[in-house]
Amino acid sequence: MIFSDFAPNETSKDAVLAIKYLFQPWRWRKGKEIHYLKRRFKSCFFSSDTQISLFMTGRTALYQYLSSLKLHTGDEVIVQAFTCEAVILPILAIGLRPIYVDIHSSDFSMNIQDLKNKYTPHAKAIIIQHTFGITPKDRKQLLEFAKTHKLQVIEDVAHGFDPNLFRLKRYTGAVLLSFGRSKSFSSVFGGAIAIRGIKAGKVLKETEKNLPNPSLFILIQILIYKIISVIIKATYAIQLGKGIHFMFKQFDLIMPEITKQEKNGQFNNAFLRTFPNIAAICMLAQLDRFNDVVNKRKKVSAFFDSELHVKTAHGLGLLRYPYLCNDPAKLQKKAIKQHIQLGQWYSQVVAPKEINLMAVGYTTGSCPIAESVSKHIINLPTAISIADAKRIIKVLK
Ligand SMILES: Cc1ncc(COP(=O)(O)O)c(C=O)c1O
Image 1 (cartoon, rainbow, N blue to C red):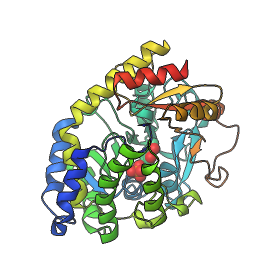
Image 2: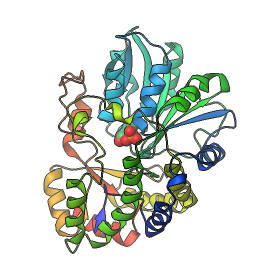
Image 3: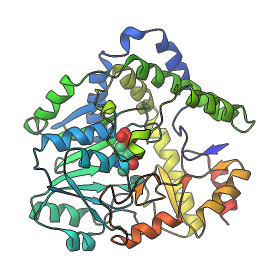
């Protein structure tokens, strides 16, 4: 079975590591790996004056960063339509107002022209999303606009990013990362904010220190997921994996990526926790393989570009490869018959579909390109072999 959504990064190596640490609970909460991870992140992706703060999820990191800005109730945060509840609910929970800007259908990221239409002086921050890991083609203009209008910048690279982008000293604002289970690297739960400068990062560092640890049950869930997801993937085609997945979800042994409360449009305070050491251990193992995984994703993304005669990836290794079609549901059904599970980020301008758009401040019709894209998009997996990519192309054609 080829998966786009389910545990794209988990391998038998991760499962073996998790089994080993299942018997070392004293290393789950605190340990030196958290510091190693920060150092590793800095040396791989960021400038030497960057401060990294780790949290239980990306949405926690965003919540804490926005809180640290000390904005006033009702202040506006500019976001793109075609995003996830994980971006919007922290904004609402703090009493801020999301202002939705339309996207380009070529890079699935914010359109500078529409930003100029939607901007008001109440706007105090902007979230620049690198959707699927594609660097927004308007990034430079968006950053210039933010500078002119004194907007706090958060570059949301939860889906992935060009690894060379933030190594330079010149990047401004904060960078939001996610290590959720379906992201470029995964510790099942996890997120971070990277900011340049000791002074700028000081408040967040304090918050990181003072947040409570995740419960023991969540720590066990991280390890269980690392083990069971590999078994599920290996046995899915013979129905066994499907059954195991169902059972583990029924008994709450696998925590959903988006909780019921979030689907009802409410930020889940249970995520306001720190990043545990066991997650850092899992992340370090993923970073050991990062270059290989990125190269694989690059090759497959370039293969899809050439087969589909488009220039979507621009040489990057995308987390998922976006493909626009007439009837995503029909294509998904056709693909499943060939044991290929295609993803659907995002099937609504603020995903998932259960989210009430009015409740998250979105006015239908205000971002027509994002609305159209969300009706036509399908995601192809990229952490696969070229042989599997050829099978996918065959289904598409
Ligand atoms: C664009 C975007 N930003 C941020 C996040 C937050 O990540 P997390 O799941 O770690 O809270 C997500 C989650 O999927 C996302 O899609």
